[in-house]
Image 1 (tube, rainbow, N blue to C red):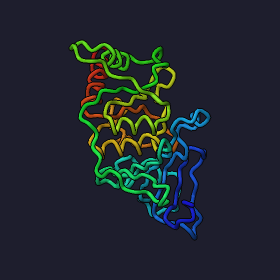
Image 2: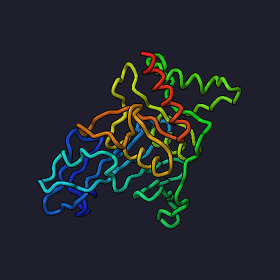
Image 3: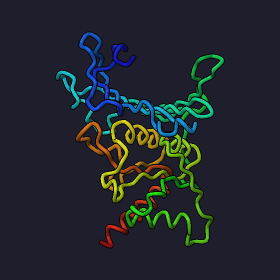
Length: 255
């Protein structure tokens, strides 16, 4: 469908090793990077899954190639995700805020249900796979400890983790808090893919007033070197992400 839309020239998919180049007679000016089915390991247990995408303009006059997709997230013209859960929802941004659309099965159309969504300044939920705690770096270990055993007398954060990134990110957008998939000993460069997983959700979260970082720089500032490049991802409410970054800076200063 994307190749037949007369809008695209390069497609990058999680399912394909190489970039897909649209036939010359059907080419348009846009590059689309997408994960067609995020959280597919959850299908058998009926947990929420989704689709993630980011759209860029082709910036060169050369023949379309994989290089056209190697743009930082700041160049995104539109991004979003579809969440297939108790209802089917699309979160979409064209760079002017985030809007939510719900599929109305009676109409067969997506209906705008919330306009210009904003994430909370600070949340009460942290989300990561604590099964990897053995491999966490010092900053992540310290941050999680603070959320579970706060030293200021405040209530501990709730822990929520679906294992489907779209579901975990959407909950973070709606309820506030923080989602973490940091680098660790097993995945020192991170595990999530930059172009079609991290960049789209980072764009959505930033457009909603949140922050998205690799731990060393904003996700959207990373210049891709390959189409399946992996990076760490930490995103969510501004105050929560800043607290995580404070732990990172403290850890680096202590080395």
